[in-house]
Length: 446
Image (cartoon, rainbow, N blue to C red; front, side, top):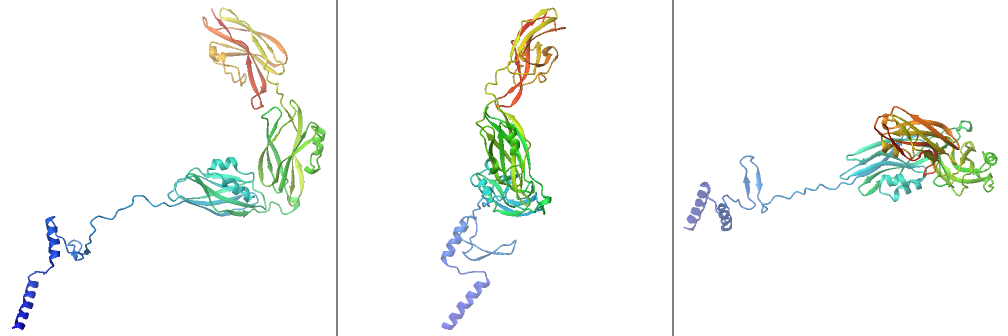
């Protein structure tokens, strides 16, 4: 009987399977009921579910929310890399490098190079912008800007010129990164010789670009020295009130020149330079209103040694009291109908070669504002509004002038002044043209 009962149970289970019935735990039944209450069927945890469209299986989990996506992109730092220099010649080379911007903002990009590695490194160590480096760089360092801003990766190649032959140069590529300056590691190259025998050596050249002064007792020289095939040049200035002693010092080494008070002095400008260099040299404590003579020399080494100097130059220091303008007087105008008689006088005082002229016209504002740092020719004429009448080209001393002007506009208010153009010093002690005028005299035509 027990065997018959057992067989009956097995048969019942088989029949239920054929009919689609499943025996599930009570906990699973409760989850299904809860899911149906929400309007859907909840499969058992971990049970496979068939997607009728894709015929794929997925396994359900107890996580109902999608994974969060971070909207902020990952930070990618910029990189600045120097590349090997190409096209190396005795006085030129092609500098190369590349900048990968990453996610940063890149400002000015530039190469800095020179034959003194310490000067190159010190020129960028304490600064954060291109402009700061350009203003404060050391003497032996040169800068070439290759980009003002950068928003994508870029490779750079630029020509460096005026290099010294047979010389090792050190190069870095730098870029502004926000509030800092980043540079590549140092690369180097060596230029080829400029000459291979003493007879082929081109000696240095010296060019005086400008003479100026910031005070009456100063002389400021701007000069450019090009070493060409020579190296390690020592640049110096020889000056004094004795023309003969300055001429005699030409071609002599710095150590061989003996100073002699105001008659002859010497001072160094630079030592051990190569390539092309630009200098500003200030000499002060000079006597005012004094004529000086000077030369600039370079003592050089290389395949051929020697000393070369400029021709003897002259320079007069300024007189501190040289500021009193000529005295100009405009007399009263005598008008008669459409004609007027202008008169006045000029005393040049310490000045010479004055250009004397009258100005007159109906534009009283222009007549009033005519004088200052200008020339007679810059006072442009405009028909009846503004006219000028030339009287004298080279007045020295004192003179009185009279001029009649005709065909004026009837019933019109005019003004007239006597003026003189002369040369004087401006605030920077440079000679320039000034116009000084006498009083403004008005008159009315009939």
